[in-house]
Amino acid sequence: MAAAVAAESGPRRVGFVGAGRMAEAIAQGLIQAGKVEAQHVLASAPTDRNLCRFRALGCQTSHSNREVLQSCSLVFFATKPHILPAVLVEVAPVVTAEHILVSVAAGVSLSTLEELLPPMARVLRVSPNLPCVVQEGAMVMARGRHAGSGEAGLLRTLLEACGQCEEVPEAQVDVHTGLSGSGVAFVCAFSEALAEGAIKMGMPSGLAHRIAAQTLLGTAKMLLQKGQHPAQLRTDVCTPGGTTIYGLHALEQGALRAAAMSAVEAATCRARELSRK
Image (cartoon, rainbow, N blue to C red; front, side, top):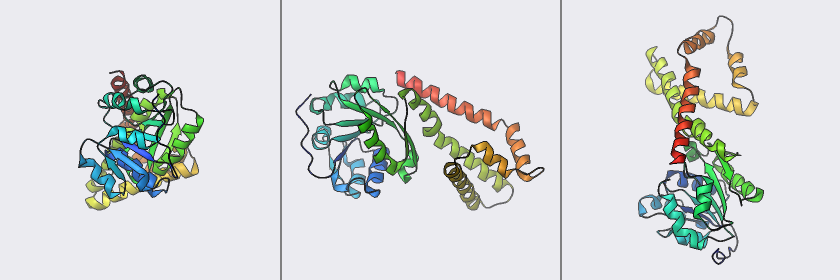
């Protein structure tokens, strides 16, 4: 490997190669949670279009990807997936044994990352989702061959500033994409349908959408905080001959559960296809 990265004095410096929405969301979460100071974050991108948002957070910026690696020991690669291989080749000469390298690029496997970086590089792969923007993300991470429990623990501790983070085998990362990455859109479609049902029955549109979103939020909190299986909570809401069981019957007639399962399966299969390309 190249000579060691410049020694960090004081707090850890965190770098971002790529400055898009997900990189900004992670940086914002880390800063707001006090995990890292804004002045110790350095982001790079080819143009100022996205870097201006990092500057607004108080972060340092650069047009040099290598500068990020030379200044920071923990680096998130948040470029578009098709760009990442070229970026890794570019920065490989300045990667050292001191670096912890984290890819958030969808569909780029750990083996591909390790092939393009120097031997013994400590690499991890993270699959985030859009609610990281509001620090309510659902993330999973997988370790490369040379990343140990210490690196995984550090990354989990940092990413918990952006939501929930779980370590999984890499084979489950594509399933997470289908469940939680794409699942955001599935949940939005369901929320929209709930609201439109209320609109059909006479409720004003804005109110219907607000109540539908709050219903999803409240239900999710109950599931997470109580640790209940969804079937148990669903049963608690139902009373014999009541409104809910009639509504659930209508959902069963529309094959809601089968459609949701098929949606996750289709999205997961597509993620696997993209990973093979």
